[in-house]
Length: 329
Image (tube, rainbow, N blue to C red; front, side, top):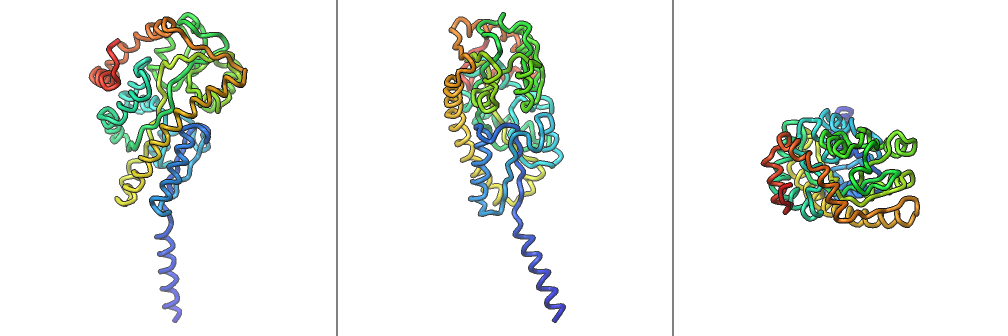
């Protein structure tokens, strides 16, 4: 009888173990109420729904687990299973092709960006990550970047001598040096304090990031330059992903497809809402550059194309221009 009872307990323990959900730790560096934060939570809910609880997604916003510079290494080591880093993050890990998204004034609108990421270029870029132990799932929008500083930024000369926070990207560094500014690489979580204390004079970001991080409260001017794009690549640890049962991967891909549509829709709405709130706060002046001022800024940054096409790949840049509907600079 004791042996029968013991066998029964063992079987119950095995059944309980088999029922344990697969845990996906989804880490990101922005606030939960940003487009990326909301989309991560949407994916969590959809993953639970479509896998009927077989997968549990744990979302960690605001650099709770890892800061910007630590994210990708943690994913590659398997310490975290899912990330949505900005596209600028992949250059330092040897996928310099992703720097194409940092080229200034490349995309006329978000629809052009989505054509590029949903087409052959997106697939081509994700294939570059496979050898890094990373599998790409989706591209999520944030929006176009605007400039902020404590002085009005209307023409290229207005940037001279200003210390600008940038993400870790040699291309972004070159863009600001072309303007005569002094780029400073800094983790996203440190930007507000750096602006508040004068460690840096300005930064570039989307309206939703500016508002949710309260940057508008410590910057006197915001200029609607739309000079660059911020987007994210939702990625997973390749070994972890390949080890999942095929049916779970299919259900998670379905959840990701719906979360991606949600992400892109909410990004557009949140940026518009954030800009309205920034204006209503009265804490910063919003400037809209004229066509001539915008062209002057574009012309000043244009030399980075010749500098970085050999690094990114001239054929890739040309392909993005064609799909985005842009002409060569």
